[in-house]
Length: 296
Image (cartoon, rainbow, N blue to C red; front, side):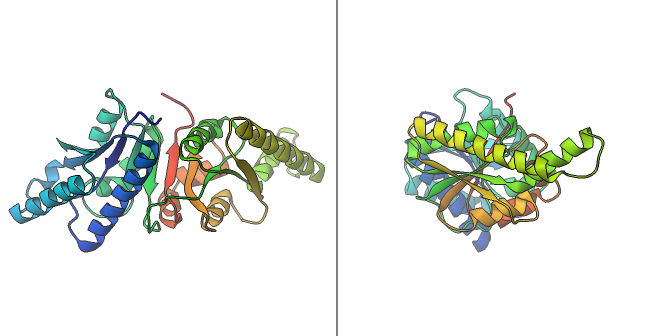
């Protein structure tokens, strides 16, 4: 992980003060983690064909932004391209050497951000082979300390996210908190009831599943600790859905990243990839690191 470079796909086409401030934050988040990992950094700037009519003064501002990025961190390599930003991200992601992570922002009106706020954004998050860090508008600073929060449904859908969090935690010397919502237990209990031909969820079944959930989390914690990573778990029994639960937990403070998987049929994953995907990113106060649940 540490030897792979950090690809920051930054929006430097929106020249408004607010957008430039957000752009700087996205870069800081990517640079901060890259420095902790001792990883090279590439900043991707893509001029889209629809922005070909940019004024000369605007082009000069963009050039100054790129030059400033170089001055702020001489280790940053600027990668300039022309075309569709999403296509360029996937091109770099599949061209050796591949990045260890892609860093994106989620607020703006031009360039890459215009794509991110549309349907193509989900394509990046869903299909990127490497982890994708999303810096939402509620994120106000680049995290440098704190625990790593991992949203898990205890199925194969979360295994790659858990494994990545363990590796990341070892490299940056962070503690991991595995987070599970009891909504998942109710979902599984409902499936049991449907298979048995009844619409009633038996309390005994719920109790059994809850006990197995706790046992599974305890086993995972032991595996993390056996690999030298401090780890604990939390179970939420109060929130109306998994998405609300994880957002509430990540907002409590003490966390630097939320790590989660993207594919599968769990309630939380459905919420994230469904119509409320953008709300999830917008409401999270820490960067969200998204991991494909299955490799290509």
